[in-house]
Length: 85
View (cartoon, one colour):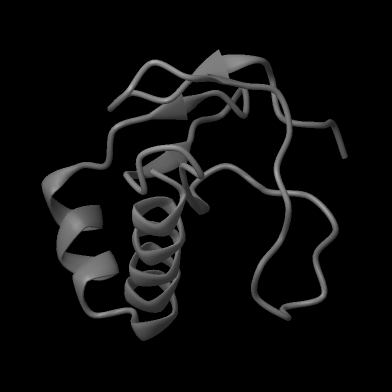
């Protein structure tokens, strides 16, 4: 499976060239359609078919709003970043 392509966070523009699986679902690398959270701005993006980041669709935003794992990850990154600044 290929590594994520170099792309930019759709929300803050930070260059992203790698990803880490946070949830224990036995995958080593992201797949198209997986959510990711930017470590710099805590925005949620989605990997496209070339493993580049794109903004979520309205349906995906509804899905992630119900996913406690995504919500906890966003909250933790936001909390960590607020302590850094």
